[in-house]
Image (tube, rainbow, N blue to C red; front, top):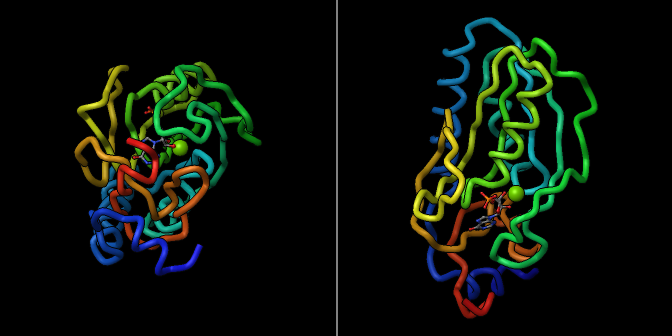
Length: 184
Ligand code: IMP
Ligand code: MG
């Protein structure tokens, strides 16, 4: 998508590249402090978390192993379908590991509730959740988030990995999508 088109589609910028960079650094510092010299396994949730994941892993001053899962809960709409399905599972066993789920955003909480339950049953030593964004107003499944970048209002956001119908992931900042784009 052309850069000019992208900016026409945004109602406003929520967080600039610089604000995101600073906050991701702080999250990395918190995680590094909490786990001291232990290894952590970062589990990135495809695809929305990839940009955040790549930046976060470089701000963690610990031995890090990485793995990924993909689940479906949204399709290409802006409202959740209510069903969570595993599209891609972990490559490695997480028994006795310090696992941190890295997700782009927690909205209804359904995806993360499912993931936490699913990974808990595999015998991790510790299991934490790290999200870049949290929309607390939309929560339907209570879920405890251990590391959170920013709490945001109930608006549909794109950029820094987050998409609408697979568009806008490449924008380096986080912006609010104009509601007329998704018919909201
Ligand atoms: P939940 O299961 O409702 O918490 O949904 C979380 C998932 O919904 C995220 O991983 C995103 O893929 C998607 N999502 C929720 N809100 C937004 C948004 O504002 N922009 C882009 N994707 C979103
Ligand atoms: Mg997602």
